Amino acid sequence: MPEQTLTGKAQRFRRQAILTIAARGIWAVLQVVVLIQLARGLSPSSFALVTSLMVVLYVVVALNGLGVDQLIQLRRSRTPDESSLEDLYRWRLQFTYLSAIVWAVALGSSYAIQQNPLLLAALPTAVWLITEQPVTIWNGISVIEGRPADLIGSYLFRRGIVVLFLLVPASSETSITVLWSCGMSVGGIFSWLYARNRCEGWCRPLWPWGRGRPRTRELAFGFWWQQVGNQIRDLDVAALSALSAAVGGTYAFPARLVRPMNLVTQAIGTVAYPLLVRRGRGSKSELVLGVAASLVPVGLVAAVVALLAPTLPSIIGLEYASAVAPMQILCIAAVVGGSSMSLGFFLQAQDDRAIWFSGVTTLIGGVAQICIVAWAGVHWGAVGAAWGAVASQVPVAACLMAYALHSCSAAN
Image (tube, rainbow, N blue to C red; front, side):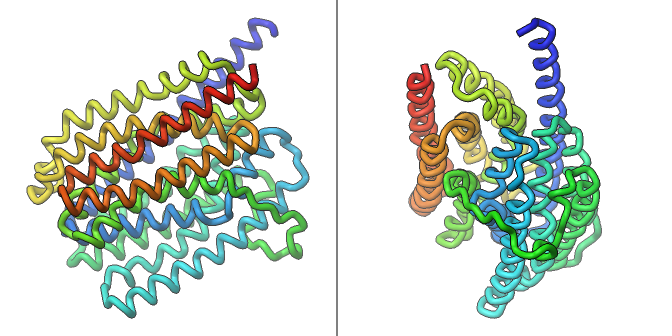
């Protein structure tokens, strides 16, 4: 291959990675601002509840579609004019509407049982579910098509509007939750309008039943397990809070910072995924080097967060003084989780067996983290919960690395 071609590909990859990192950086900063705004306005127990609802929303997005999102991206990466893409997209939209209905009913039923006004205040997020899921697919396609700059506007709308809503003075915890949920729904609508004119015609419809039933109805459980496993780990806060509201409230804020710390790792993996799909397996040295390189940014961010952790009480309140140590421990979990994320991108670009192994392993690790964090938190407080998160993620990273290395050996 001519040197100019290789140089051009490297430059395109670098540009796409930088733009994707910038977009993820905007998302991470805005997400942290939202968390700080909520933490300053809510009690630790209410903060744990609202952020748990937030996590459940993302789990719903991951659960919904049974892996069809990633299947669309896989086929779009391999064959841009794949005939099944439109049917798969419309099939996915049916899950979108079903999830919004189930979410609204679940919130209403929970409110009827518990009489907690925060549950009712979160009801507008059902609108967010309808808009967020198509936008997530569109953003993935934008990266595949080499247009990662589109992500910047999408994240600004999706998170920036929530920040603006939370700047409105609130008189109670319920009104703060209303502002958050309304900001989520309005931001979702604007991001949908922004992204719709930038996506291909086959994935523009918002209504799935306009042209009859989709002819192609496939599911991709290997991808699904991976998505669910990555998201379900964040339910450790909800599980711990159910057993001990005080410990859950202390653990909640640092636990919510783990995902933003991996923004660079996720951005690079998102850009590299279509290239991995087209290329296939690489060598062991390339795998190890790629994973090691992906850990550099998250390691640097985690080190900075750990050093700044003692300032947490002065930022969000003295009641969070006991969250300093858990935050520092969870910086280790962020680095370990970053390696698992990189390995997940690699394995999902391989054959069906690798996709299934990656998905099942990640799912088992997510369930284990919920159980271990809840058990350790009850016995040893927020510090024990944080160490439980680390302990549950190390075996997952080790298993994924072992399988990835075996996969490289089998190919060579």
